[in-house]
Amino acid sequence: MRRLLLPAAALAATALTLTACGTTEPAADDAKKSTGSITLTDASGQKVQLDGPAKKVVGTEWNVVESLISLGVDPVGVADVKGYKTWNTAVPLKNEPKDVGMRGEPSMDTIASLKPDLIVATTDLPPAAVKQLRKVAPVLNVQAADAADPIGRMTGNLDLLAKATGTTEKSEKLKKDFQAKLAEGNKALAAAGLAGTKYAFADGYVVSNQVSIRPYTSGSLIGAVNEKLGLKNAWTVKGDPAYGLAATDVEGLTKLGDVQFAYIGSDGDKNSTPFTGVLAKDKVWTSLPFVKKGNVHRLPDGIWMFGGPESMNRYVDTVVAALTK
Image (tube, rainbow, N blue to C red):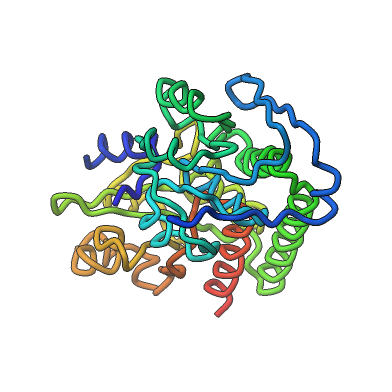
């Protein structure tokens, strides 16, 4: 299973090396208002013309798939269905979409067989692949991530997908609920005396018995959410310009000092839980102040760290619960 994000896969490699057709459920008012043609401009500057709200949609990346589901649109095709089901149970698939191949290498023939109204890709997909997809159906190519404004990019992509599918009222509600969740979480942590707490979030992998750790800096979506909650990001390493992710090893954790440390893994991916696996007897890991104090928190599986508002809502709830227990 290809768990890493497309650009992060290269980073990690350097560091460690429906059948059913699907349906849409747009808000009733949106459906009435959005019956005419729709013209959109995507992240690549391309004009995307649709005859009306897209109903049969294919998603080549999990973040756009999550956003579609949150908007009430069940995609007819999804890249790496098994991987999505493993890593995103916060916003589960409600149908049985056709698996259209790898996220970085979707099957053009499979997608063409679905006769979609719209294909949603991200800028992680090579331009040559996007060009091929445009021969199959209109392609809305959204910017995958932006470390300069992670939350703005997430909500901006949500809005663009909502316009394409006639679900703008649902998008507005999702954004409103997300802001309310951030405020609720911030208030809960402040009430517990945890405002300004030094906090480090990461994930990790084991490849060929070597552990690689990915710090989520302030430029990551998770990092931006943490700061909205009033937490102080303890990472000092620099993240990449898109996802705000960095790379380190166990020795790199010694620079964190006394912090609250949290991570997400998956029981469905045996290489994703080194903190309770191979590091359990590692002398560097066990000597870290936050490990000695028991301030290591494995958050629940199934929260996609690069997802949309609903994944982030679930993340907020779990962080607050972990830090205030």
